[in-house]
Length: 168
Image (spheres, rainbow, N blue to C red):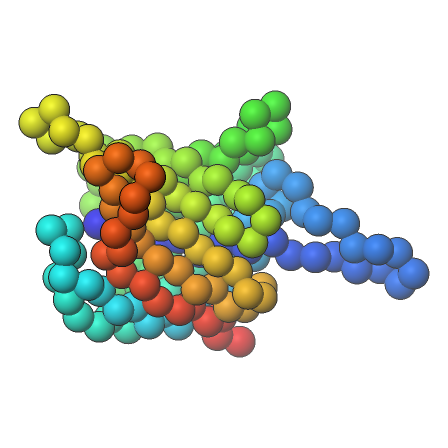
């Protein structure tokens, strides 16, 4: 199941001063807000072909070393996402807590410029398959994304692609 996660860097500007890129959890603060999502799914062993449209509302706040968002999809509360950041390793970790409970599986967020990647692995019968969601930010209000899988971690096959637009 894809946990809908949308993050972006905000640039702060002051008159006469060059804007500095946000650091740490400040990078994910633009996560808050409402997003229109259009997704095209491909027919693969991990997905069925089709179109999907959704409205995602991220009701977010920051407290100390945590950034938290309650995600509401098409009016239905789905998950609570908790983000942490380790400055020593420049590592982000997310903890999705699904509506109704269940086991929490921490995830990783890798930020490299405008590319924000959420990778994970799934192992069954001794065989590991790699998955990832890659968000490419064209602006603070627009994301092109793709979901992919790989048997070797080098050659990727798309399971879905789409576009997310912030609703103002």
